[in-house]
Length: 213
Image (cartoon, rainbow, N blue to C red; front, side, top):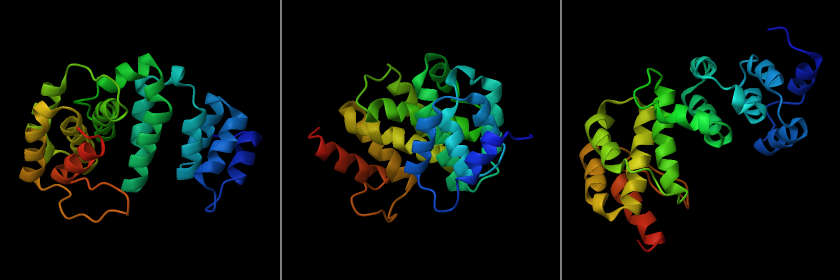
């Protein structure tokens, strides 16, 4: 893609020392510019793609375009691709009914990044204190059956969902703890000071205690 002078100028402002706050400032000045977003995305670089996500028009995010973006993300290292997909969810997909409906249809998507977002969104509904849809039993049953066979990026999001189900819904707490004990996912993993371990028995104990649940 031949890029405009505006895109080239913005790309010239981004380097290895650019911070997330800097990208947000640039995005605030630009506001919404989907065509420019696609130009920045075409750079293939991580930081310009983060900026691109901030200025996309979510009304133009069709399933076909999201499929392309998801495929492009696979060119990035593991952590970067997950950050880009999570960033897309938080800044665009979760803000429009049409794209929320798309996310809710991705449970069995061929794209592991889209499956990750299906689960991450379900976790986010609970984590942010929203009233979750009446699908907790269905979700937990799927986690119990599938989590051990999923891709690592999806496993994390399924585990995260099980964690928040266990925190907020005592009816399912024992089953969620059992998932962690059975799979052993993240057991013994070191975490930064102040962060909650992802190992489900620890996660549920700590986060439910914080909330006196």
